[in-house]
Length: 163
Image (cartoon, rainbow, N blue to C red; front, side):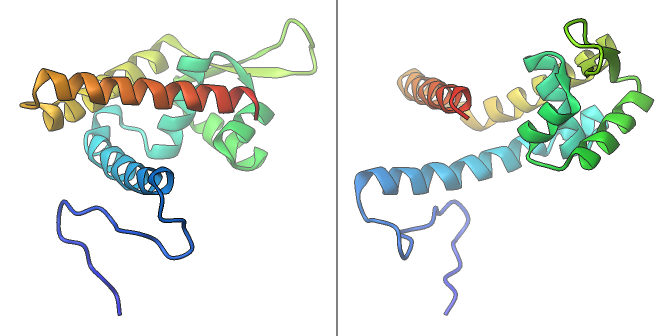
């Protein structure tokens, strides 16, 4: 029997997952994160980029130039898939390629000024969409959410450093 959730409900306990505070929190956070991203993506039309190209451009805008192999690892796709995305973004004037100064065998991909502007416009639209969701919450709740998001960001940055 399939249990369908009502609008606004988050899933309950999952079979095979411990029923403790840590896993309950992870379950609710996972579900809320997916729904929040889905909500934020509703405004992505302002960028004229699909999800994979927007994600790749974000890596370059916020992380700086990367090689194709680094981009493939970060985006968790094959080198040919990244090459296709890079080619598309390059044709649109969003990214450019250059030979690395430290090793002439390496080609680095970086965001252009136009790519940065498109991504910043899209990010601003996403932030406004999330702000619309949060509007009306008491300042105390907003501070709690911000502190929690900052903590999650720190945990992700630390795990990325060890990956």
